[in-house]
Length: 399
Ligand code: PMT
Image (cartoon, rainbow, N blue to C red):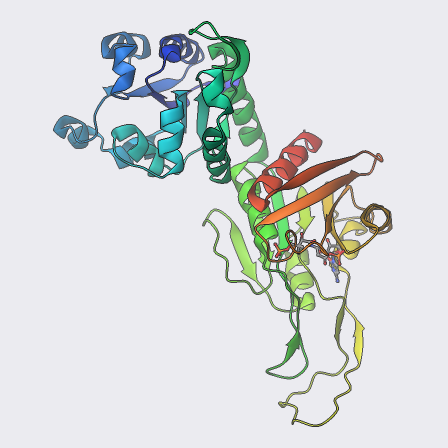
């Protein structure tokens, strides 16, 4: 598992019967060259001793929040910055609930809240707790925050019951982390570009034609690409959205400006065209504000089709071209038609006649159409999760 070598892992052990398995996780991580610091929650100490953790990890074991010695040596903020990733194992129902609420009542939850690193949770609990709606809601919230969930698996519980809730085995947890780091290391060398948001086609200095795109889908895609290691450029029409500084953002207004900036930022390995680009622009834009009158006739002309141009541009065509299809009817037929006519590798079709999803909604439901006639539907969920699943497929396509 060579992707683990020299990685700094902050292991947070919570109070569950599976806590003893964290000792095995420590052993495997150490064997693969990781540096480990550990936080033991108060209840975890009922299951494993600080001494056993320290001797196996050969790293500092932290216990409570404001211990003068800790703060002096490495305070909770520095601890979260030190780590390359944070592994919460086992993640009990209580811990998951606290994290979903953004609690920071102890060192573990404070460090996680302050963290800017990938966070992996390994749930472990009784099958009834795992099935409880409140637990599921809390997990959905954490997935929205881009926490990665490993497991649990189905098996015999310590309490004798059988079902889903048994913590994933340490070797499988470490393998998952190794796979994640493999993608991050590989993707670091890859460049991604996303177009997002609406465009504005001016009629005169104060009036313009636009649409309802908020840019949310494109921004979530750019965030997910960046978190997966890609050097990401986001070319954004007018929105009121912010994004993490790791993403290079270029603000534009018109389709022409978006086209120019897209070309300037090629070549890339993957380009995702989620922007709602105006198909038409005003034939003759007035330099002065048009005076009110009973009638106003505006002549429109076709705008450049950015996706079509880039996708058919042989020398600078990205390795993977992902288009979107915003349809109000015949989604499959129209999306496949765009997949072919615009020479895309993937088209993401979404039904924008459904007010619950698509334009300006936090939710979306998409069907992914591939060149090999395969298709798969991602049912309605947050645009964050939709983006994570789309980027997961891009990772696999670019392997
Ligand atoms: O921004 P949100 O509020 O989050 O809403 C998300 C979304 C609904 C805008 C998004 O999911 C979406 O569907 N984006 C594509 C919107 C669109 O213009 O679809 P289209 O079917 O009209 O265009 C097809 C493809 O060609 C798209 O990839 C589009 O970016 C691209 N295109 C279109 C016209 C043009 N002149 N240049 C282009 O590049």
